[in-house]
Length: 204
Image 1 (cartoon, rainbow, N blue to C red):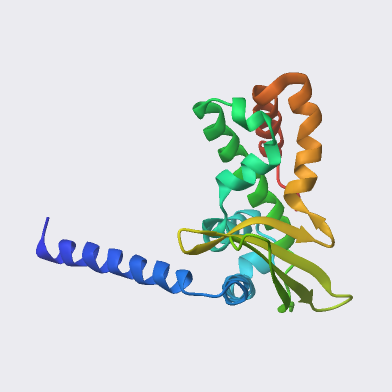
Image 2: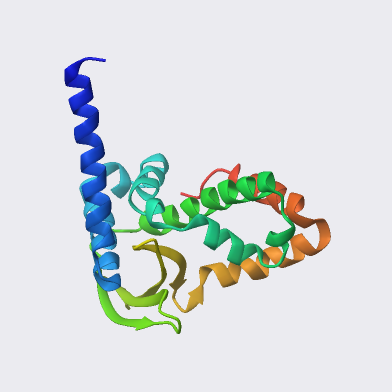
């Protein structure tokens, strides 16, 4: 490895460390404001996203939103008590499939971004101090849309563990949808169902 390559790698890791530190130092409302601001800026600047290019929208969501989601907590909450009986392999598969599903959900929402802005309206700490709900509104043409984030402080960084869109918490909604599948066929049935849904062509 050349000295240049070593210096480049060192600089890259230093940049990542600085970026992680910057996110770690943010207050929960500032975290949501910066994340949503990054997404809106990227979406408005990318003509492919504006034109509804599914691959571009998915790539945007995967790059700008998904790194800030605690997938293990989200998946565990959505699966409920069955999570405890799942093997390590099943848990890995569940997280991968559920991530793919959430990317599709987020992509569908962000494909509609035009001139919207996000305004933080309230921040409320949950009992215990490790969770916070940041309430916001998406404002643009038409009535504002309620968009709240439930955040967990994990090792000094805020992570998304649930999202409330228009009054409906996403994880709670999926828990209700998953329960009948888990009741009939268990973890493997849910993995198979998620795999089936994720293989369907994304809605344009």
